[in-house]
Image (tube, rainbow, N blue to C red; front, side, top):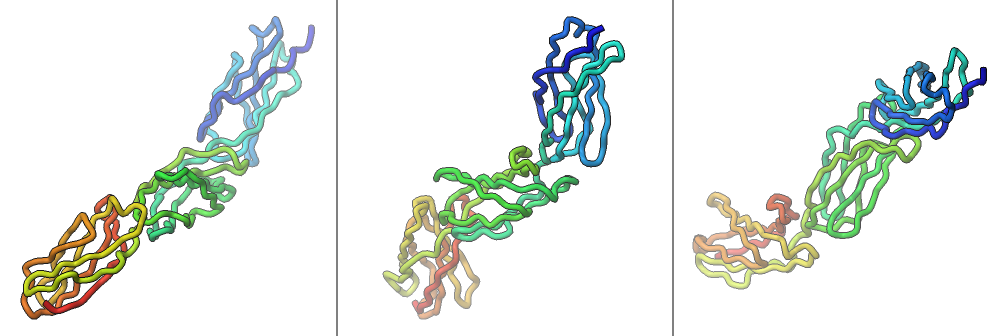
Length: 267
């Protein structure tokens, strides 16, 4: 009896969070009568899976964890020398991704993870807008992304990365607009008895998509006027009354506002 030859070409066809699909080949003419023992080892456990074909799905693995899979060919109780492959399972997606702070050129992101292996994770944050994509890395469950453009939509996608620095989990995304810059040179072009004409300027590269909210404050109830251009006619005012007009740039989502700029005057 000749000892069976070791398995060849052992590889992982699929790597998931909790399962790995292995394949291999054997060249023996007796391969039809072979059995295969797959030893599954990590830092905390050692178990065996058996297969009658040259592939195996190994389940019940721990996300983001290093495993060594060793395949033995068995024929008539005779076992070959082992052939091994080591790899990391994919980390789980991050949880509760949110923006803790949104500024003009900075966004602070936070998220959570609950994998048992997460203490060894790093994180890749993909930053996508109309400008070229870029990546930010973090070793903790938060990141400050700087160098952003005011009033611009960004999509931030966070990937957990296992301890090999390569095996990534599925990305989780959040999209938002950075705050527009404050308006410039706010002034009253005309002040009448019941009408004030305001003008201002903006120099953000995204300003062509901005709208503007003008808050009108006096002793009467506050109200708002909107404009799609860098000027506004505010009507229905009371003669001889003090008003404060505050202009906010609004990004293309219709919600994200820049810091207000104010002017006070009497009609």
